[in-house]
Structures are given as C-alpha cells and as structure tokens.
Length: 187
Image 1: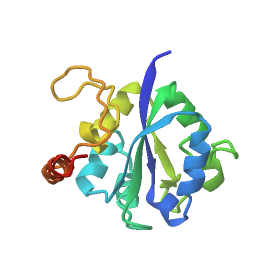
Image 2 (image 1 turned 30 degrees about the horizontal axis):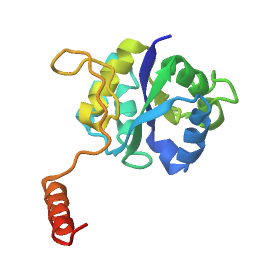
Image 3 (image 1 turned 180 degrees about the horizontal axis):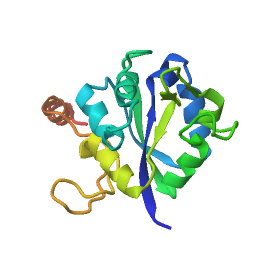
C-alpha cells in the first residue's frame, strides 16, 4: 500500500460550532499522521482556485462566500494527513459531500446541513482522489510548511523532506554565544 497525503479543511461552520476537537479526535482513529496544520483566512482567489471545478454551478458564488467565512467566521483550519490509504480513510469518516446523503455517524452526517440557497454546509472538506489531493495540498501549503512532502515540488522531483525546526539567524547567534560562554566557563 502506498503512502498518501490528503487535505482536510475544517470549514468556517465547523470552527464557529467549536467542532475542531471532535473532528480531529474522530480523524485520529484512522491512525494517520498530521504533517501540516495552519489557520487560513481564505481569500477570494484561493477559494475560487480550490473550487475551480464547480465554477459553472449555480451555487458557486454562495460557495465562495461560505468558504471565505461570510456567514460564520473568516477562517478555516487546513490540515494535511499522511499514511496508507489516507484519502479513502478520511473520506469514509467525513461522509458524503451532501450532508443529507451522508451516513448519520459520519462527520458530515452528524454536523452538516444544506442552506436555503443550496450550499452544503458540511463542516469539512476532504480530498476526493490522489490528483485532487496533490493539487489542493500545493494550493494550501508551501512545501516548507509540511513535516513531510510526498508530491513533486516546483523542481518537479519527488522529495521526502523533514522540517522539524529551522533555526533563525538569531537562534544560531544565541547558540554560538552559548557555546562560547560554556568554553569560557570551562563546561
């Protein structure tokens, strides 16, 4: 089985309903690793790029306003999960995109709804397939924001990078000063 990464967004309605802890707890049952996480204030450009495949739908403008937080809160929590069958595992737990068709025990089945304007307020987004996962992760995250990257970067090469901590110039200077101090004091 191949290791995959998938994008999960806890959408504005999920944040405003304080469902973040519940959602992350349920997703932890997959035993996948979180390799990227950040709070994002979604711009119109990002929203339109993310949902570009729905551009011709009559609900597109409402969807863009929804993900930008015009009805709830102006942020989303973007997460990247990694592991074997990550996409399938997360999609199963998230449930069907349409909350009314989602299993009642799924995240969308429990917490989602359809607005009077036809927008699915389904609390979470989960990448649909490998191609979409790669596109979405590259859209929402820079490679250096992920602990591991498995998709080709701008250089078009496959990389596995571990970014646990990158010291700043000040950190390096403080470290050098500490070493000098230790030598000076005979430690």
